[in-house]
Image (cartoon, rainbow, N blue to C red; front, top):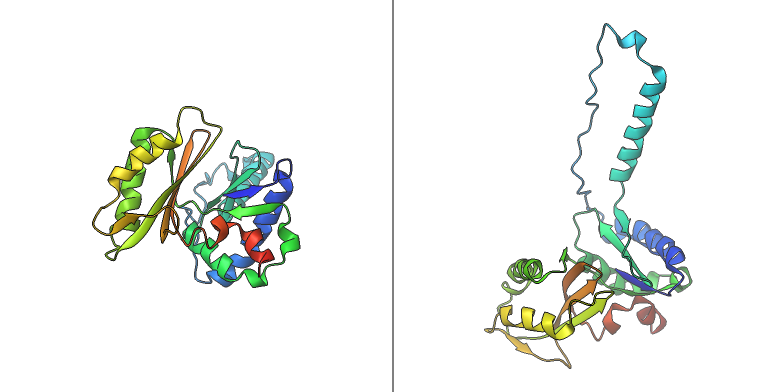
Amino acid sequence: MVSCNVGSETRALGQVKQLLDSTVHDLFPDHELTWERFEGDLDVPNLEENKEEDKEEEEIKRLEREREHQKKDKRFQAVDSACSGLIFFRFRINTKPTDFVTKLIDQKDKIDQTKLKYCSRFTPIDYICPATTDRMTKCFERLKEQELDPIKTDTKIAIVTEIRNNISLKKPDIIQLIAPMIPKDHFKVDLTKPDLVILVTIFKSVCGMSVLRDYYPRKKYNLMALIEDK
């Protein structure tokens, strides 16, 4: 999820797409596409009628298959966020957005900031669900199992919430929903200098969650601000 100047969404979309495509092979050379696909043609021709088949219809089918194949070869898919100043890309590779953005930040010295002048924050979202309390609860349970439960050392943690174009959910409601589910054994709340931030972002009817390390030292994952400080 990338924040950009309001009114510059189309330009920012192109800049982010170019950045993702140009860096994915260097950052994750062993990545794989995660589309489920069948390599082959499921159309079995009737041998007796094959010569009489409408060539125009056959050409239309061929073009449709080519378009579908090209679509499924895309590593990153732009999705309408329905929010001004916000663009969203769905990852179609076996790489977590947090891992991708973290490596991107680590190699920020190699990025030409003039090619991202319409962009600011690159906020990775690893978990997506509908923005309803029951679905958010289930989504956080999955996040907790995969991200928090493996941590066995004392860790300072904070919950950060963001809400866009949604009037049914309030920040205190989200915190009250999430906070009781955080394991108490190794996690201590620290809103000033947390080791980890649980980011819960709501845009329209969608909820995204991530566990982000060094959230404030990394300027809330504002890639452009980090590049300017290099």
